[in-house]
Length: 386
Image: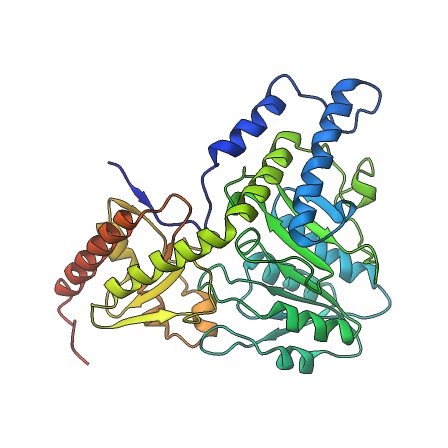
């Protein structure tokens, strides 16, 4: 049965224009970018350099500040562990948010187990942390602050420019998880020292990402987490995935060119979807009403468990939370952090709209969800009982 895909925060399809750019490097241009003695290697290295420039331009950065990784999870690990370990004997304190992606939270817990101290900051009911609160959490031994630009579940966007300025003034490093915002929100020339991104969130291939590492004013020191050959100035060893890197570069250029029009289009579609869903009773919007990703809508439907609703949505592909944790029986840690009761958190759906999403699909999806929620509630003998 044909499905309408509404889970674009989990992943995106490969844009055909990106695939076209990748194809030569999957076939006849198969050289190793580290092979410096023949044209096959030179050709691959040249393609990687073009992609570095494409990603760097999106950040207002120098191409040498881009380190290729397998995705945002690896980038986050390199940023947090690498920065913490580089400060051995010095600072041993990190600051992050309670609503961060598990890639950040699990890395912080790993560092805690090895002797570092971590402050997990609370957020308000919309998922926002005030820059002044972050500044107040800093200590003389704070090495790094790590905050996601846009939350992967509720879409709330943080004021990273203001936070970055305060963190820099205090002498700590600032890492931004931009997996959800890169290519969707402006990121050039903001005061960050480290920034993680992932290709498959912006219509590029899976299995490739990047870490921006500031080289000057100040130069950021990291301890490598993968050894074996000293590739990428010793920061991340391993043979480069040239086709995927080419794809990430092209996907970045396309996203930047279409950012403004796509942001407006998705905002309109998202608001259209919410207006339709809000005609039901017992509907709660999670996250900030305006400071959120254009394509994100996170909604709780009282007394309509998400698993029961999704079971009736045979023509829709959406989720009850983040892809990395949607199989868990526990309520979302993000929803808990913004004060959503556990019972209501289990009645929550995340809608992710993307480049291929149409107005007709949004209308049809709204019809199906409304029907499914009504059916689940009708089957519940306790529905409407206080």
